[in-house]
Image (cartoon, rainbow, N blue to C red):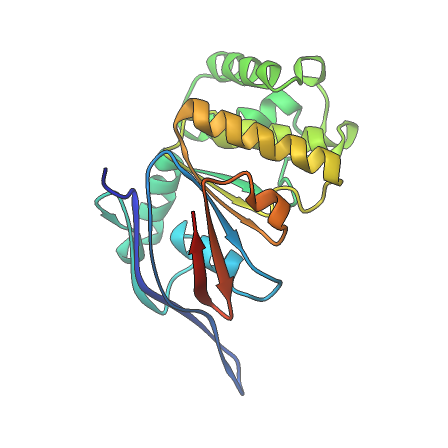
Length: 227
């Protein structure tokens, strides 16, 4: 089986007036399709920067990022937007839901960007949210939902277009430990059922146990790759 993601000698340097910070420092790794990977490190270790680089949210200073046969590092901004829309889903710590939209409208948002008719995309959103235990909350706005419920809506939005890869940056960072465990179990089971590749960032080793593989990062470098 071929890796779905190849990262070669990836480096990201942030420059200020006085200093140069190597947030990611010469990282090389391979990600296999249909597997889940936890990127683990302390605050400031470079884990979120690494995730953002692989996802094409940030530009590398040096190195290569291949997803399938596509060179993410060499794409124009418009190519990146189109590539992410067709291939990638995102889940963030802060949920990033639209406050004026209902749960089903938020979950369906990506499909709107892909041109799916409103009735069809809302039907798909309702089905996914019901499967996630939110059937009674379809018409609720984010302010009417708990943190765990909001994150379930965010996961539904990320998965509704059946992306090949799901990126999650501290997906349980704003949740209590019990809800965090529920969300991680939901991610693991959904990704396994959909055969999606999952990369998620966490500082919590308990969350990392939900992954098939754990990548430890410190000072921008991978220090351990445990299976």
